[in-house]
Length: 190
Figure 1: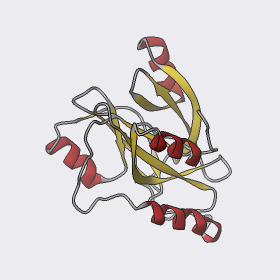
Figure 2: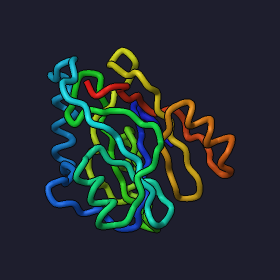
Figure 3: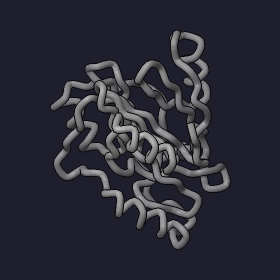
């Protein structure tokens, strides 16, 4: 796996989650956001909570949108987990990295990555569809990152976990493999 110095998020779904008014930005918008990063302020003014949901297929889905989370629960029957995750920014900022969300075509499974090359390779494989940017995460502690986030995988499922939860998953849930550290999250909303 090729990694950028960023937070890769992983998700799991077989069908696209369509939520009115909560669409992710198009690829052109993502490129513009990354290009605009150099002029973005160093202070992140707004932060949004990252949620983990379990899909009916046993995959993991991540969102930072309240309306998308509600739609996933009410329209799709997914379950909000108690996984400890923190906050990201909905807008680019200096030192922040975009989190790309991909839908796996084989079952209800999503993958999120901060690596542009990983995103492009997975989309070119034909097994993933690019859905846009989930949000922006600190690429380092110097960029405001307070909580390191890791990605794990297990037979077509991907998870994000902070350090203590990552260790618990690896010890108590057979089959999970550590993909490595990705990016950081903010500990608080502001």
